[in-house]
Image (cartoon, rainbow, N blue to C red):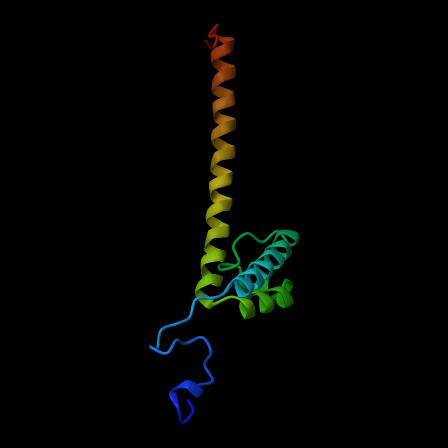
Length: 115
């Protein structure tokens, strides 16, 4: 910190000591970094970059560095967890649709018809 409170080098802090929310440009830079990192994960069949951190860092080193530089650590963690949650949600929906289709086929084979 400098001699005067307004000369502090930490530009992410407000005058009251709280953090300043990211502006539109920094959020957009974060989302671009996230999308590039996730595309690399998709290309390498990695779903969970938290559990598979070593593999993700090995195969997507440039992308993860840019993602982590563009986003706050809480956002990085949030997006990584959200990716796994959405993957699991989509797999569950897919499984339920298949089970429902099988149930309908079974019912139709027994003479049931939808109204």
